[in-house]
Length: 231
Image (cartoon, rainbow, N blue to C red):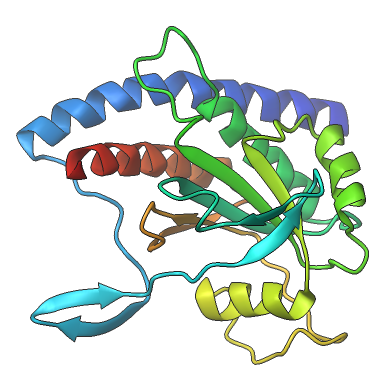
């Protein structure tokens, strides 16, 4: 499949994801009322407390986005669901496809006056550079513009490598190999990670698989309903 055909295929898959999502909201809401639906599981079990399972709650990290603003993922995005991936702008293997598939989610979650439930204000897409020395915020801005990113709803982040690698490794569980973020340390994952509003990990998805992208979109819509149900 040549590049032009790949672009068209990705576009139509994105349209399909965006089309299916409103129907998903209807089916989810209907199933929730009947109690016939299971929410996405929580990951990284830590301990039992008073008979209840306690799962890992992801700690905060502050980084610089493509607009040059220092942002906190937990404070500035309080109450939002996050979809996180890790990329670097000079990558020519998995990162371009990973970013294109994240763009499908941007399309699926965008506001639509005909849609009963919009996710754009509830979900934030997050792409963190694993090569922050090269990926300055200016470089990430160019990369984001090239991919047609909505800068308010999808942040590309850079910062201290040691902090980023600690977050990826110890908070999100993306690598079992030890490392301290030094020059030779490198994490290159194709996974998308979904964090709920309480910063529990609710899913890992193959970011190169369009079926997994659709499942991610569906699970995020479930979490939106879960959030509303708690209120």
